[in-house]
Length: 152
Image (cartoon, rainbow, N blue to C red):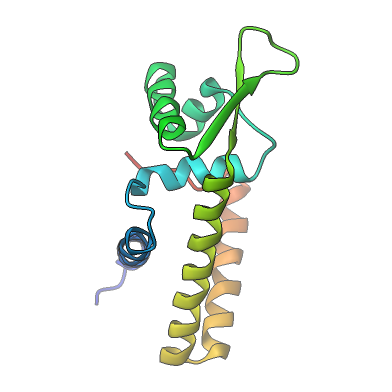
């Protein structure tokens, strides 16, 4: 590989992992989850709820697109809408038990992938890689907020 291709290698690694995970999710009964849903699930899993506007801002999509996504996820049983505690015009979106089950399965599959990688390169190298990536992200976060979101 060429020097300077590390960002592409990181992106391709992420894509390969997500393709494997989504294949296994489908086999485990989560046939209606798309990779884009994972970004919404991740965002919602780290807060006690969000509005469609907040979710849309995080995902980099319009409010209308976010409402459409929430409608879709609610119909599929992954999120729930409840009254917002302080804004009567808004609804609070939270993960449903099925949404949490999906996240738990993704975490388990991610751990399985990491175990496989440890077998390929060794636990010490995988630990060092994780530490180095955390260092890179810490450096980047001094310039901007770094969160897991889609790159459209």
